[in-house]
Length: 178
Image (tube, rainbow, N blue to C red; front, side):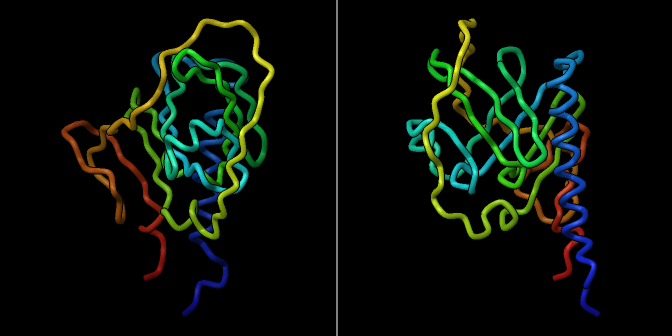
């Protein structure tokens, strides 16, 4: 029987809602305790806005870290924007939630991974440079490398490798019919 209700899409929407809610709470109150986020996104996804130099350096995927030094986090229904420092230069990035490929909070060993086809479906090169109003703020260290996140087990097919730490990455493939 064909899934006419598309439960896989409902689950994905709910999981992206977790990312949105975590960022919205951070926007309102700052990061509590040791919480911090690793957010991997598809740089060529529709609606992504980042400097041309970053798009060239990361032509497919990029991971950002929201921990100690990030500014002007704004969370909207369909996307979020944040200012980070790369090579001591502040850059404004806009990321649609649909472009997010993975989200993790290593402080509590929590992670979500979204299927590649969800973030890359029908992507046209749409990354465009933007300019941002920036206040004078201390520069953060550049976030240039993807971090391997601690994960103990995965559900469904996942590119994340298990480690000795506890935690779980939930992959949408577990809910899709093959």
